[in-house]
Image 1 (cartoon, helix red, strand yellow):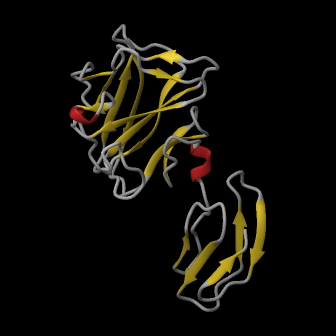
Image 2 (tube, rainbow, N blue to C red):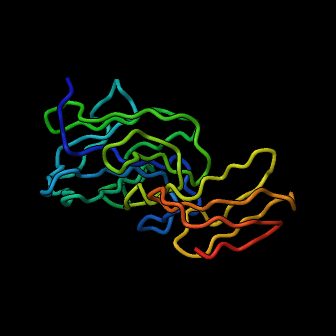
Amino acid sequence: ASASSPIVINEIMASNATTAPDEAGEYEDWIELYNNSADPIDLGGWFLTDNEFNISKFLLPTGTTIPANGYLIVWADEDGTQGDLHANFKLSSSGETVILSNNGGEIVDRMTYGALATDQGFARNPNGTGDFQAQSPTYSDNNDNGVGLTEHASNNAFEVYPNPTSGDAFVRTNNASLQPITVYDALGTQVLTIQASNTVRLPI
């Protein structure tokens, strides 16, 4: 059975090398839950699993709450000695399914993902409600901030870094006659257009 719930699986990272460390300073897989409601919700007795034949694989401990419009990180590292929110399973970077169930055993959310690159987030966009997409990670933060600059150019290989960024962004290209680059913010608003060659700095 499934149940309607304001709590959703909001983002996952299946290969964390540099994005965010856990309490022990280790870079482990993580699952981010989000509360779409205006009230805190008690998740004690809820379950997370990566196995649809074992819905009750990891029990969220009594007293686990998620703030209104807030986030909860569960580490998928098979190391319960490091804290109550360390699940007894890991995430496969080649893809699998993650399921969230409530304390009545009803599935409230499930998501399936494919192969993900290291330090790549797989997140709902818009935050909390949208479809999942691979994007820059937004650990315990609004997924809409991870959209960043779109790295696309016809017949020209180039990269934008860091991406996303709230300050300076750089463009590196192998083609000195690169077409003008148009920069958009996370809301899709055009910020500027700049003629670029080789490595340039975008003042955004």
